[in-house]
Length: 231
Image 1 (spheres, rainbow, N blue to C red):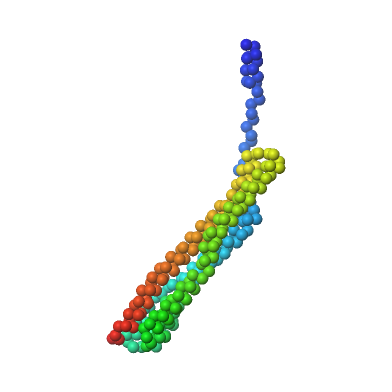
Image 2: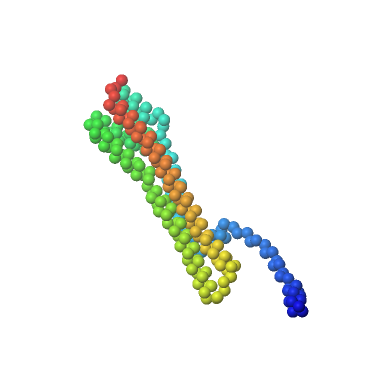
């Protein structure tokens, strides 16, 4: 009985653990987080700059090349039906869009067999579409490479963390968590760059697809005006 009382007394008189002082949370800016990502952030940021440049450059190009006057084909067909091919060709030359170049290529061969006109306009359309898609393939590459670079950075960081633990024999949650969150920054950055590049690629492709449909309608109207009798 005395032994039990002594044990209880010992338990009640143990030192009460002192609550650690609250450490003010350190505010982390975006620049600080990127620096904590390590050297792998350099190629990820480089890919982000390249993707941004390509998107802006292609967007501005498409805004000009895919913008066609609403009555452009109507004005051309009116001149053709009036028998004034020179005026139709001059009007098409003043149109700065890709459709203007395609119609112009057809007007240059008016009077020749219809098959030759179709062939020339098809070739011109393929060239214009290729110009629109220029360098867009790089966006697809960046969309796939950036996330993989991020995962490589994270895996490399995890390997270094556990290697350090094996040397110091110190399994501290603080050490593991601190090093791990820094290395996961690369994964997050790579995924963000990949998503942005992927979205930019498909937004541009949608713009080109809409233009292609409208261009086909304009070419159809142009070819029909050639086949229709002059008024």
